[in-house]
Length: 392
Image (tube, rainbow, N blue to C red):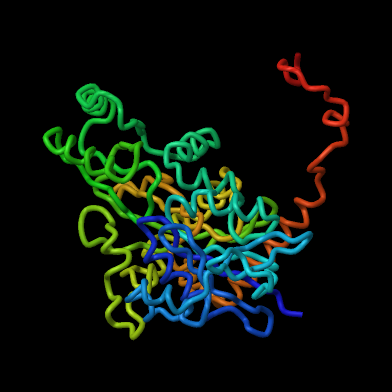
């Protein structure tokens, strides 16, 4: 019997379009002998839609028209099942379109990749691919990551975190004193290089902070690495067993890797438009020594385990081009294009990658169900009311 997979993508995120591209890439590679896949598009206002048009990239040139010709749906738990019900003008219609066995979120950015959508699936009781709720949240918090990496003995750059309401003058003074220049300013919880700037001197700092704060109420400032080389390595697995991919070196169009570098370079060559992260200009495998490659792969596995990740994640590294000193930069818990190109470089086909992610999700669900989620205390049966609560 085929496994029915709900492929969720989109959502209220600045990386909305990238999510659409990544998800529809994945849609083409699921083994249809094993899986029945329903593409489920999440609009920017949080509504769910499915239908034939939802699975076609060309339809996203006119999203209002796409929505009109698609069916609005809502996942709903019915006993032990999660059904996908049509949503009409008078509420939910009773006949389900499908019973979902698994959610497969291919989402990027805040409100979707950061544990919010994963928490929704957990509340429904619907198994889902990728990292669990807590690790997903950690994966979007660049400062929390650094704290955990440092605690695990991983190399990280010095950094400071600031909130939007703090005094800007004190903020700039502290940054200059503690970090010096050049430095990087970026939103605390964005991906795809959104909101990031390289600051070479104090005269550029306040403008960079304003820019980063326009994307997030918290920003991270960290010492810049110069001369810089960036290295990426993906990891597939869970806390018990994991493997590292080949290492790549992205080719930067400027002094830091930008959103344009990642998603707009080379996309016009494809009949379907941008190829997502797979269109990024890269050196694959990275032109580094076998010893350095092994070191990066080992650090990637340690970083993966330090955050308790599962499924597939990409760990990004910064390296001093002269000394080859390496630092863990950040993790992508749902990387662009699911980093399939890194696995293909090692001989794993995209369909196999998706297969592994489904297996890991079902394994986690079996393990989760083996633990108690309730105890019979009789508190409500014996509670007589009153204003002091249960501790009165």
